[in-house]
Image 1 (cartoon, rainbow, N blue to C red):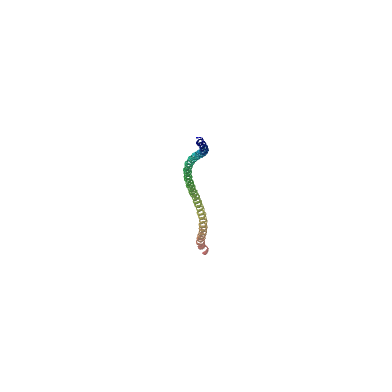
Image 2 (cartoon, rainbow, N blue to C red; image 1 turned 90 degrees about the horizontal axis):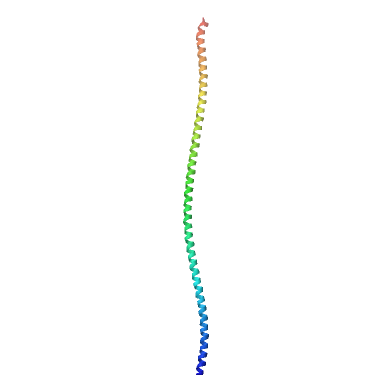
Length: 146
């Protein structure tokens, strides 16, 4: 009976050691499980943060696209306004150039008209002088012949 008691005691000592080892392993396993849970929670939190960031970035991308479209539309309006202003400036310049050309032409016509008047007056003066001379000769000549 003593022998059995000693064997049981030795067996129980071995079992106690084994139990102690198993308890240490269990604590280690629980620590690892807790670490994995914490890691899983961290991953889950990180995934939620990434998802939130993704939503924010998508919103910013939509706003950026809308801003770009608005800027393009504004640029087209500015370009159209510039083209209209340029066309208006060209039309104004052409109108002024046409007026100046017409004024220059009128001045040239007036100068030519004055020159023609002077030439006609000179020709008329020559003609009148010639006619007067012929009339004098016609009137005086018969008297001189007698």
